[in-house]
Length: 69
Image (cartoon, rainbow, N blue to C red; front, side, top):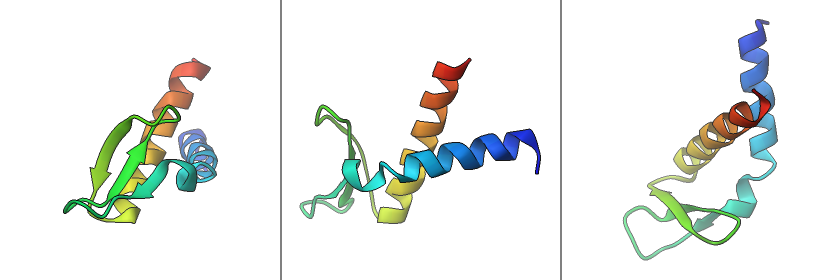
């Protein structure tokens, strides 16, 4: 496995631990799965839970990358 793939896998696993804590279902729109920051700010809404989880993993990856470099 390449170093790049390992970095992505590690970031995805770390982000997956936080997924349920910041993704909530808001049934009032056509995009019911919303990502919230720890402070409660809405960061984005998606049609499916899977799409919200994917975006959250992307965000966590770049957050980790920014702080590690």
